[in-house]
Image (cartoon, rainbow over the protein chains, first blue to last red):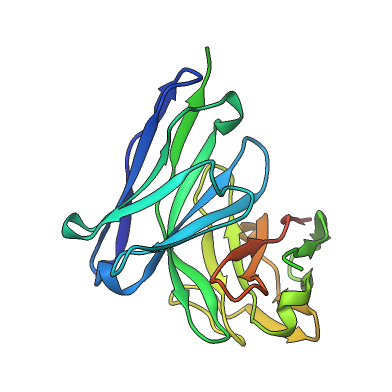
Amino acid sequence: EVQLVQSGAEVKKPGESLKISCKGSGYSFTSYWIGWVRQMPGKGLEWMGIIYPGDSDTRYSPSFQGQVTISADKSISTAYLQWSSLKASDTAMYYCARHEVLDYYYYMDVWGKGTTVTVSS
Amino acid sequence: SSELTQDPAVSVALGQTVRITCQGDSLRSYYASWYQQKPGQAPVLVIYGKNNRPSGIPDRFSGSSSGNTASLTITGAQAEDEADYYCNSRDSSGNHLGVFGGGTKLTVL
């Protein structure tokens, strides 16, 4: 079964760092882009960025460039999303999703269950 | 442009047909994909490409596209279809960047 398993909920203080994870299984992890999607409380989905674990090629939405870092360790089939200094506005649910990127096709066919990040003093 | 626009809310009577639309310049070049999200759950892909349904998605869901507008149609809406629906596409930059529409809340009456 193809699946993405995300790390558990986090509660942090402003200014702290954080790294959350997304482990893929049931498919060739290095052959698909993996991306991250933010959903703030009561709001819509926001596309953050993607990484190709095969060569670590990483792309960011302009809205998130410089705010987060996306990485991957292909040896353990795991992608990461990290912050160096959290803000209260980072409070959200974060989903990882496997991307299919083809000429005219672009879609996310497998999703993790999400990681809740709460940033509060 | 990297924006996709959706109507915030749509309603449909049980068993009737409803169309949810998504507009954006990037849709002239790339197909939209559609996601259903129910409260407290992760999004689920329902339509991708020209009009493709992943395994397990009922055939009452279909997709179409014309110009800068993509549409998700539910033919014979069921109570369990009540959810938020989001469109997504690749933006026009050519850098594999994605963009979501603002989402449409579907109410089945």
